[in-house]
Length: 166
Image (cartoon, rainbow, N blue to C red; front, side, top):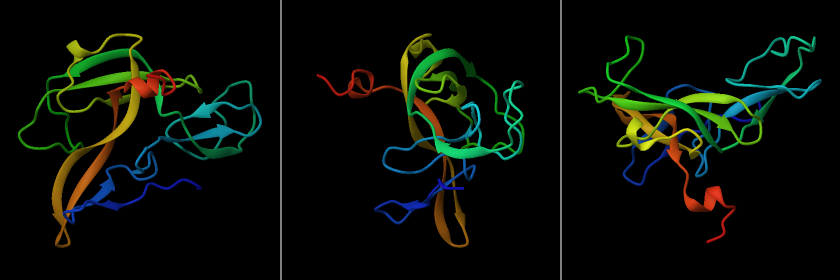
């Protein structure tokens, strides 16, 4: 596995770790980690080993690869109820929006939360989104204040949607 989620630390000493190891990075510009079939080029997320998901390909050579950080909203909804265990959320539970985003390069559709404060009413199909990270929950682990991070789909900044032109 070439791309590993990293642990980071804030200036106040809080340690940040991925809530799900190996699915995304915690870099300044985070990205999802997927796999690409070496034989036919089919992409898959989350990363895994085994057979290519393309039914027309018999390869089992999936190579870990970074995926696009930007895409467009394919569908969206709002979750009004706390999911059951093992899902962990901050207390008290606050409703949140989910967006299915079609990646710009790979065409995969990846489901994820949107940042706190962005509701379904703020989203629309075709809207440009970019990958960011957000705190899922916070707790003390072995005496260390720790934030468990998830990837989120945020409305894209103008530079992400037009190649940096202003």
